[in-house]
Structures are given as structure tokens and as C-alpha cells.
Length: 441
Ligand SMILES: [Zn+2]
Image (cartoon, rainbow, N blue to C red; front, side):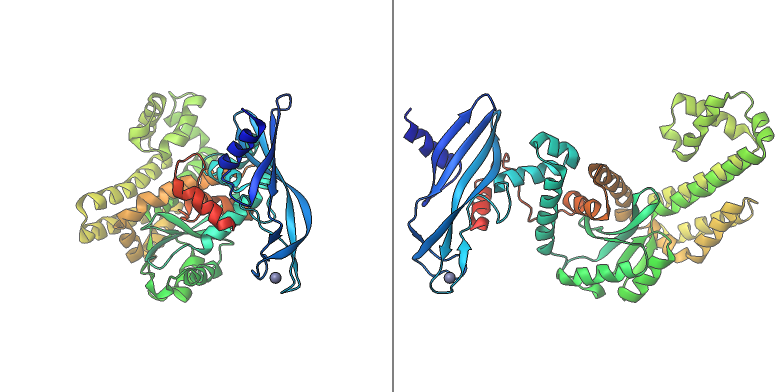
């Protein structure tokens, strides 16, 4: 095959059209590298600034772009990009290249691959795989997420979930707002005060949504969010979801157990006598878990806890009792029955002589209607829980580079269901390549 044919082949493989073509291909097997010299053969060009045709080329600027590997070869494009001196508008401007965004040192296809890798891999891992720096990927994620989010449609949003998470354990809180119908992350912002809800409402309106159209908000019992909803989402009804209420019951139970094991160590020792220290520690997780998820060792440990006459035993029964109210509500789907069940549970908690449960009883009682409503939001309950898992994964994906901005960007990338992101160049789709090239022009 003659040299000329090879260049023609690569011109086609890179999707180049007149006046661009590959002039030289250099394969360096020792360095596992392939370099393409691309030229613009036009003598005169249209002005990129004002569009007036037939302008003189003032100078050419050397530029290089990293491209998708060709098998084991790291591929690079190089070109002397013309700058046009325009007689009409007087500006000197560089012509855009069809294979890359302005200012990027990666080709569009390389960026598309990078973005799609970051949806499944930790960013650091994707960077290693692509042999680029973390920072280079974070910059692209930021760019494409912002671009795609700008075109996101929120006009149909009616049911939302508001939740908080932290960038690091217990610090730098982020408020996240999910579309519970479309199961996507709508909005994330630093902070967890009532103003975060107003920031969401404004973002919603900027994306074609209406704050008056939000009918329902599922959330935890934070007073700040309740105030935010009251101020910024005038038609929304609040409900408290299962995930957060059961989490409160687990916290109350842990509090009782910790205090008892610390202050009444002897009673605990006596009641759980047959259990060794290692087996006793198994209770910590078994108590939080559903009985059908217990391991053999946990079942044995729980056998002794259930026979004991400990505060921890009562606390565990109360927690299970509340779970049961939720389970029953799902089965019979009867608001009246659930109202009775929850009242009964609250009075049980209040008579329990366990301070954390007495407090929880009071909390649930003062938010009674919203708690009951939450029991019948079946759509959201399972989903709120699943979303929390995805947020944790997003956090891990930002490891080594994690701050509020990177965490929010990667969360949007993975959970936003953004429809205007570049797609992987390895998913065959003729329309996709055309779109990528068109957008660059
Ligand atoms: Zn011009």
C-alpha cells in the first residue's frame, strides 16, 4: 500500500472532510504511538467571527490533540490551524477544527469516551486507564455536565425528594433534590438550610418547571427544609419517608443500647452470659438488620438478646414494631388502619421508659399526618433508599479529588439522567458521530 493510500484511509477513519485531510502518518512502535499530521488545504477561508467568505489566512498556529488509541498505539492529531485576517470585521480569529472543542487538547471522541468511562468508574481509575490526569477529566466533567444540565427539561416535575448528604463524614453538607417520578437527580447545592429549597425553586424555573406545580415533597424531619418548602413551594404537601423515620428509630435504639452497655455492663454481662465478647459485638449489626438478613452467628446472638430482660431488648422490639407499622401499611393500604397502628406505637414508645423512644414518639406525634402520608408514598420509599446508595458511589468516584463541586458534578453525571451528554464512541450509532462533528462546527 502506498503512502498516499494510507493517508487517505486515515482521513476517512478520522471522519475528516475537505479542506481538512491527513497529510502524514507516523507510527512509532518503540513508543507505541501514532501521530497524524492534519492539514487545512484551503488558501482562503470564511471568517469564523462574522462569516464573510474568502478571507486571507494571516498565520497558522501549531496545536495537538489526544485522540482515541488505535489498538495499543496512543494517537495524537497535530495541525497548524489557520488564523483568518478579516477585512469585513477587522478581527483575526482562529478557525474551529471539526474534531475538537475550542481550547480542548482532546478530540471530541476522546472526550466522549472519557465522560462515558466516568459514569461507571472512579474518576481516578478512568484517568489512569486513559493515561491523563484527574484534573483533565474533572474539567471535562464540569464542562459537559454544565452544558447538558442547561438543556435539561424540568417542566413535568411534580413529586420531589429533598435530602442532605455530606461530602466528608459529618461535614460540608450538600442538599440534593430528586425527581421521584423520573428517578433522577434534579439539583444539588452546598448547605442544608431553608434557603437551599429556594435555590432549587429558582433552578427549577430556569429549566422550564414551575414552583407552584410541585405537589409533594418527601424528606426527613429537618425543620429547615420544612420552612424552605413552606416559603418556596407554595402548593407542596410534605411527607416524611420511611427511610428517614426508620433511621430515627435505629438511632434511638443505638442510643439505648450504648448507654445500657456502658452504664449497666454487669446486667448486660449476666443477661447475655453465654455469649462471648465477639458474639456480643455481632448484636450491633443484627439489631439494625432485618431478621431475614441475619447470619447464623447473628441469629444465635439475637436469640439471647430476645430472651433477655434488657432495655436494649425493648428498644429493639420498639424499632421492629415501627417497621411493622410500615410493613402493614404496604400490605393493607388502609389509611385508617395505619392511623390506629401508628397511634398505638406512639403510645407504646411514650410508656417505654426509654428516653430516646419517648422523644421519637413525641416527634412522630407532632408530624403525625405527614408521617402517615409518607407510609403511602410507595413510589418514593424504596427509591429514596436506592438513591442514597448511588450518592455513596458518587462520593467514592470522587475519591482523591473530593470537594462540594466535584461531588455535585459527578452526582449529576451519574444520577441526573442528562440527555445531552456525549455518548461513548464505542456504542455504534451513526447519528452520534454526525452530531459530534456538527456540534464542533
Ligand atoms: Zn469577520
